[in-house]
Every structure is written in C-alpha cells, then in structure tokens.
Length: 126
Image (cartoon, rainbow, N blue to C red; front, side, top):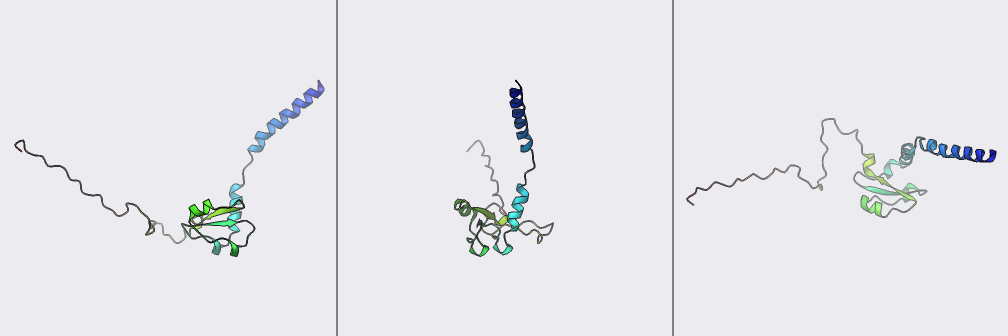
C-alpha cells in the first residue's frame, strides 16, 4: 500500500509540474532581437525585399536580396528569412507626412470616381 501511495504521489507531482512549466515566460522576442542584431546593417535587405540568411555562413557569402515570395519558397532548413520592412528607418519621417506609395503600387489613389449619370425621364407621349 505504501508503494502505491508513493507511485501516485510521484505521478501527481509530475502531472502538476507540467502546467507550471508551461506558464514560464517565453523568450522568443529576445532571441529574435539577438538574431537580428547579429546581422550587419549593410547586409540587411532594402525595404520591400527579403533575404535568405543561412546560419553559420559569413555575411559576405550570404545570398543576395530577392523578392519575399522567392525567399520564402527557396529557404533551406538551416536558414531564416530577413524581411527588409523589419529595418525601415522611421527617424526620417515627420509626424504630419503621409507615407508615399512606390510608383509600381497599384490602387485607386488619386483617382476620381466617374460622374453619376441618371437616366432622363421621358414624357408619356414618346
């Protein structure tokens, strides 16, 4: 009976320890910041582009910046994608400035809607 009590006690302690360990704060943000800080500023991709960053490869031997869809598609297992938008310099913008769209952006900016033409009422004689 004592052995059964010990087994149940140990089982209860292990079962109750799992949720407690799951509540520990995750350090994903700090780890991500450390990884981003390890990338030299001149090796970061320009805004709107991405770069495949292969672990344990010097910055001079990393693949060139490319569009993000290609980078995500071709990422090897030992690499991560560095997005150029993560490094946008916000110190140059003024508080009242509107963000400018690139010339290749498609949309309805600056386009006036067409005039509304209402049908004319005809007289009953026509």
